[in-house]
Amino acid sequence: MSIEVIKPGALSIFQDLGRAGYQHLGIPVNGVMDERAHRLANALVGNLPSNATLEITLMGPVLKFHEEAVIAISGADLGARLDGQSLAPDQVAVVAAGSELSFGKRSSGLRAYLAVRGGFAVNAVMGSACTYTRGNYGGHAGRPLKKGDVLGTGPYVQSSKLARLAQVARSLSTAFDDEVVLPSDAPIRVIPGREWRYFSSCARQVLESAPYRISPQSDRMGYRLEGERLELTEPREVISEAVDFGSIQVPANGQPIILMADRQTTGGYPKIGHVCAVDLPRLAQKMPGETIRLKVVDLGTAQRLMLSQERSFAALEQHCQAST
Amino acid sequence: MPLNRAATGVSPDASGWTLHASGERLLIVELQTRDRVAANRRARDFAARIRSESLPYVTDIVPAMTTVGIHYVPNRVPLAEQGQAPYEAIVNVLNRLLKTVTASQSNAPRVVEIPVCYGGEHGPDLEDVARACGLSMAEVIGLHSGALVDVMMLGFAPGHPYIGMFDEQLSPARRATPRTAVAAGSIGLANRQTVIYPLTLPGGWNLIGRTPLALFDPARKAPCLVNAGDQVRFAPITAAQFDTLSQTAGVLR
Image (cartoon, rainbow over all chains, first blue to last red; front, top):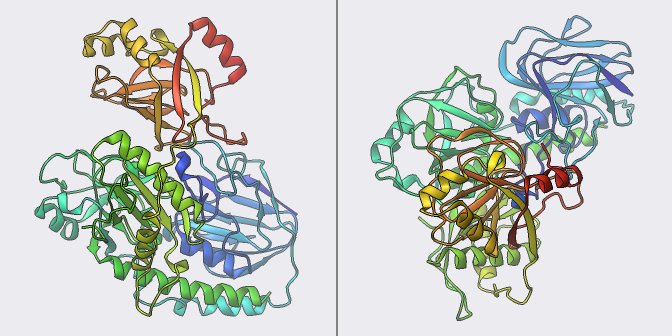
């Protein structure tokens, strides 16, 4: 069972839910930038959420399927086509042997997730399939896909119930609470950070009122924002400590950096806030050059939203796996 | 504001701690000890205690300088009552647990000797450091390699140790302009601490030497050369020894 890379695309890398359990060694978690899209794609083909997906950024690859497969693509709409036929996000598609999956014009988002029924065969490094490009390990040979790579997949399981998966796909728009998944242009919700009280009252107001532009220097490690300076009331030493996906660090130049999937394990800059877990997928789909706004919510709200999303996923994943 | 009142351990040598949210999936235990080295050792004792409990909803336990970071999965935390938030439940668990921390002085720390070629092309900032510290280069090397020091934490990059504290005379500030690429194995010094770059990385520390040993190799059974809580002694080697060793020990580039 193999898939041949005819063209690699701009950045096509295997990711999963992250390399947990090694952060005390300085080893980053990595993992998918948009967890929601990754889990949807996996659910739609009846995989476990822990299966690796191919994270496809902006310009997608051309992949030739040498055997029949069942696939789903979620997240950004990067103009996927199967043998020239348009393939919309969140659909379950049967790929005939010899078919080519290609990508064209982007119409929304930045990152698409390709799941193959049965999963991709990726050697685990420290318990995870995810690629850490800076460390040259994980995923496919520790790097993004290249022309000529041959990708293995897990055993192909025939299913008589693909129609049921397709039915799930059609009902996805109502899977999550409206409060959990906001429209893509709604403000990104943040919780006050560890050093919130050391920022000037002006900075705390600016954070919610001013627009911030996502700098071109943004990547999987961090989103650098450009906008009004966020000032501390006085210079302050912050001792290095653990940071997380979504932590908003503010270095001396006052321009915030949101730590993303490839973030370092620890950081020594003051943190004005943390992006809520349920809003990280929306942020991860924003392009450099786009403008975002932030909105402060409290910790209890953030956890309540997260639990709500988790309940929706549990129901969805259970239903999809039972359908296979 | 902390999520708990400052809590105090039951044993007489125990120091207090506070718990803080850092986002909705990470809690920080902050040690209240004034002395940095003491707080750092205490942080590792706390981390070991939490690790020994194998809490199924905790994914990573990250001891740092004076804190322990606890990454958790909110939806897996058992709630004591309806309407309780996961962070409230885990704060209660941790407060109970941390009262039972005992100092782990029984186990002698592992001592790792790390060969270093000081100065020259491998340590381009040695001369500047000596000048800033008011010492000769030989005195800097003597103070740096003469001390048995703690690996205080790993962080920033895979297998990247923060080592200290060195003699007070070794207190140069970091470089005003960080380098965009520092070679793997480079030994940085600033403010009585040393880091060792495991991969080619950007960095602002003063480079005083380089080790031929690979600090990190994902294919090794133990991917990291040193762990937090180890002690380290640096051993000066010549440039010729560096070349010989690097062929066998293989710095990860």
